[in-house]
Image (cartoon, rainbow, N blue to C red):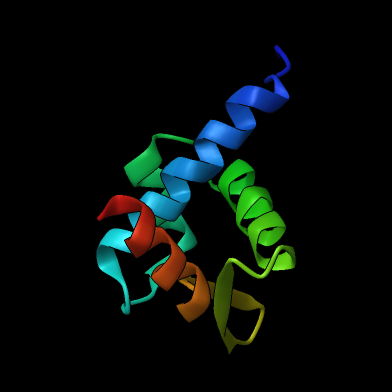
Length: 87
């Protein structure tokens, strides 16, 4: 498997933020985000966790037994900053 450059990873993160911006304030499941950016679920989850550590996105976890479903949304502050950039 080939390695993705840091520059491309940053562009994929930007795409994730764009997807979450467009559906704000709704939450999107990890699977839905990965479908929209055409990436693997686990890869997308790792990038979303990274964005969460940067306080750009927030997570809502639904736990039912062994299954954990994660829903994601932009942090309100990140939404406002992104809105300024887009306008």
